[in-house]
Amino acid sequence: MLRHFLILAIAGCSALSAPPALAKNKPNIIFIMLDDLGKEWISCYGAEDIKTPHVDALAAGGMKFNNAYSMPQCTPSRATLLTGTYPYHNGYVNHWDVPRWGVGYFDWKQKRNTTFALLMKDLGYKTFATGKRQINDFRLAPDALKKHGFDDWAMWTGYETGVKGSGKRYQNPYIHTREGSKTYQGKFGPDLYIDHLVGFMRQHKDEPMCLYVPMCLPHTPFVTTPDEPDAKTNLDKHKAMVRYADKMVGRVVGALDELGLREKTLVIFTTDNGSTDGIVGTRNAVKVKGAKAKEVEAGCNAPFIANWPGTIPAGVETDALTDFSDLLPTFVELAGGKVPKDLKIDGVSIAPLLTGKVRDSPREWICAVGLGRAILDEQGVRGKEDFATRVIRDKRFKVWVSNEREIIRLHDLHQDPWEKSNLINSNKAQHKQALEKLGKVLAGMPEVDARPAYAPRAANTWDSRPRKKP
Image (cartoon, rainbow, N blue to C red; front, top):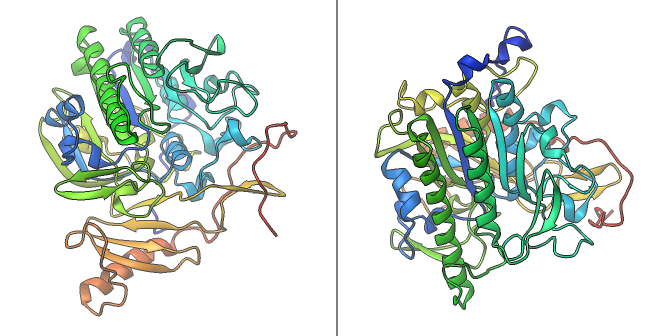
């Protein structure tokens, strides 16, 4: 197969588990992912309209990636990083807001929905999630996160159709914990999510931890923060929200220092996709419009920083290719395990790059899939089209692929980082070679994208997503 499809083997299920004595020597992993933020709002990536000192400190003390892909939208990014598979294999090729629209959900009973949390638990880790979910409905499955491998959690539910107050993730947030879902009157959600995280860290500081922090910030609605209550315009509120997210990053790192865990912990900082449409930031003297759900680099080439004092050298900047499918195998390898032989994934581990054993990732290409919203038909949730639009790139060249499986654009990102010049009709040898190389990658992808894997259930009153028109 020409796509990066990986099957790693272990000698029986018992090989995945780690004895407690060995587990204590494993690194902690904290994965922090902001919601809707491009590089034009991170100062260490050249943002000129804001300062993000805590994120900048992670970059200064670690490894900053230039070529790391998220997916272009919420659900595709989350499903990809959780499962190590691309949207065309896990089925989430478009956004699907489960508590709002119902029907489909991220089903723990499906083998292909195995999460990194489940595998890390088998390797002796304590697992925790806090922030934004939206791919399960906690009314129907209050223990969904437990089923997906998390020991504990504090998650905004997502807007639950018909439930008053459930749409609030910031002021007076509606949060789901082991005790159930409720509104926290007078509280600011981002503070509570990190409070729960730090509490879990203190409780399990003597055990290896895998902590998943998909922040709500700075996704719309635009709101004021406790630090900047007088912000007026949407742009001013957006800046305040980004600064508050940076402050929360600082709280997490500060807790590691307080607990004496800093050199035992890998911290990864990234975002799930580009910034909200309509918000314009300046990056390296260029005005960049928010590109969430767009094919351009500003929509899917995410800020991605790995920091691990004593293991990752300080101040490293890399052009190595990686994308969100690589996270599951990377975490498992760092934990001393292997991906089960019956679990098919697309990602490849970048652990050797992070630990200094190699200077590049094994990647020849990366891919981003996931534009627009999913639909319903008679069989359930599916992508808008049989074959979703996508982009594929190597370190220099990038192609855009249509719903008809045709390459419609070619860009030289070294010469044209803002993708203004389409080279699809160029006769230059290097352009033809790039089309041939990336065309072979495209040819190795399924002709029809998978559907999300879930068990059908009876309809609920909030199952309101429109069906596909005939």
